[in-house]
Image 1 (tube, rainbow, N blue to C red):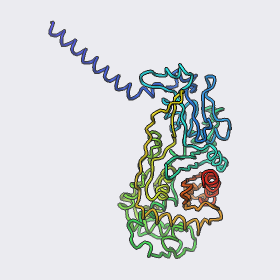
Image 2: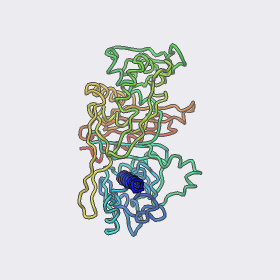
Image 3: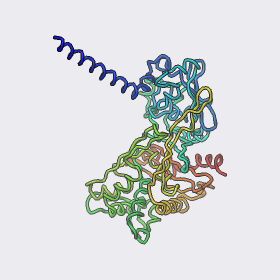
Image 4: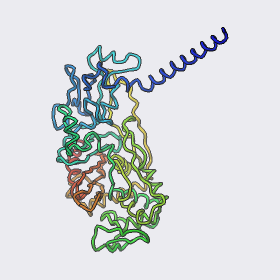
Length: 464
């Protein structure tokens, strides 16, 4: 009987130690998220965040702060709406926002003392972003109420200075859930379209196909094509060129004129294996992480065992490929930066209520997406696009290298997704951009002017 009781006690002790160990492991892994649940009355009032430090933009303009036990946002309503998806809302409905992802740091929470510093000082820690609220305001106004996104990043440092997504709302006076559910103008309002949207890339994907061709077709610059207005693959449907009567073009001109026939043929000649390898190396299918913690949509790309016509459609950006705009922004940034992409970042620094710097580990990686030679060649081609197709007078003084895209969703032009992406080839003002506008018709005619307004503001403020 004593032996049986001893075994029983031993089992209880083992179960207790296992349970204690599991609790400690769960606490270490999940305590941050537990503390930030909306029913924590130390931080929330009826589900609304009230206890957190100040979020500043790069110009030390407060974008969110706690005052009289209430969360208050930027003074300007336009700035509040322009920065919503980066800063966040009081109910933490935007999963990629700074207030959601960096909540523990903003509240001053730690695993040992909980929210003691918040209760003692009345506020948490402060965060300063790389975001420029003035540039965000310009981008928001340039979108002019249209659904879409604008992103701008320093391609040398990886600092994101503009991240605007529309539709949006005023976090100071948010709409009710019923308003959002019943009004199509709010469709996807909780999603940061720069990071999380799933867009057909259209002709901007020809940048990827062109990089693959530069690396794998030694004679590509010696070739010419007479597209005839369409390309008929051995199997499948015709691929129509945007030039109704066709044209005779070389590789460089084919990209400038965005010739579907030529790039479909190039994609088919390259084949599935090479396109897959290039897309994977450029980061398509892998999630981009901002400031080490904010996750973007990974994107989808797969051309294995598909028909010849579908391979051609994929090469011109009209297949099953889906990208978040941040992915294309990273690719053009690498082209601008000699083939290497640096880690993207939204956080500049963090400080305690006493002004003491917090030790934030922000990735500073550099990843080679292509060779320096490939990047240089691609830069020349994108510059040629602007000089010969989009025209420099539309982007005066920017020395722009860019590619437009018009992703067709159905047979109605007004439903197209308009893209424009590129960078300023300017060592004193090293910024890349991406603009996407839903139901935007033409990429260069709809997204291009938005890019010009934003980048002119960037040049005026940051150019030397």
